[in-house]
Length: 393
Image (cartoon, rainbow, N blue to C red; front, side, top):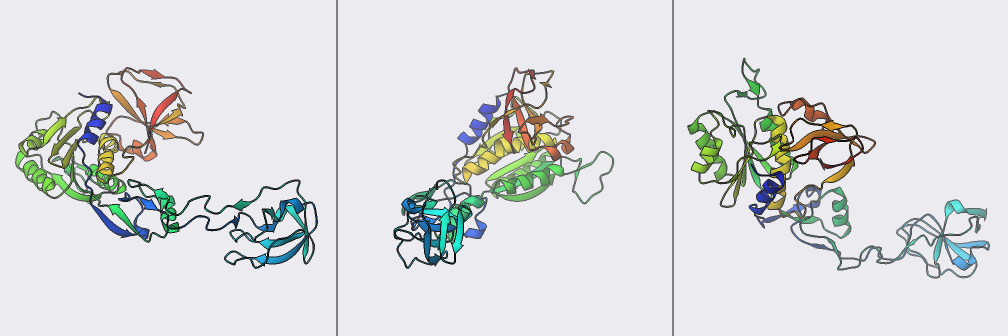
């Protein structure tokens, strides 16, 4: 067995960025990885603009009554210059007139007549967004490798990017092994279960930004396993198998992978759940054999496969950041020989609490999970209130 940190670093070491890109409409760029640096084509703000609704004036005059000489809506350029004792009524986002060095907020003014106001506050900020204080023309606004989220779409739109160069999505084949498995539309007979892992992993692949390909269920025979794996390697960048990786009489996956020329980098990891996790490479193809229990397969995808998908696409942050969160309750375990990843939920108080969990086959435990608590090897107990490492989902 190798430790968790080593298994993750091994996967990333043997994962190659593909350097292939395509042009997609801005609307379709969310959850894609940016393939080029993005630079601003304009200064922002493009002029000194009002940060509030109010009255543009000279700050030295705010103790006096001020005569309104103009109304400036957003999108209209001022026609008059502010001089002693004058002001212009101005809307948020409108250009600031010459001569003005502050904006009095509407709520801190009193209208004395149709054309006269006075300041009712004690002092005022400038309330002006200065020319190019956010971004200068030519500045980089987003680096290559950014995973595009809605806030990045806003930035791309602001700098005139209507089509975005993004990394190609890798193709990921998802295969499930086991004679006990049936598809979701089948009522299981005695000894059978529905193939939840295949559908779970398909959607995890999709969420990670790759193209999922559902390869179906493989019968527990050497011939079926050989045929399915050979086909999957030929048509994908990544192959994921669940089940068939342990020590049972019908667990053929590691044997067949080696027969197919896959160089296995590890076959077990010191993690609970998910000990029988397999990883191998064939040229630039990656193969993952994940445990058959649903919590294990879900977790090991997030720990190992998702970072690989992100690295293939050139993400500059393929791994999710670990955060430190107070533990909501005392935690104990009987055995501390493996690194435990405990299904948990971060509550509204910012604490993390383990969910009710009966083991790696307890699929329904995942419904309430939004994080996993990371408990290192050798740690048997943690006290309520102690800070713990947490991997958010």
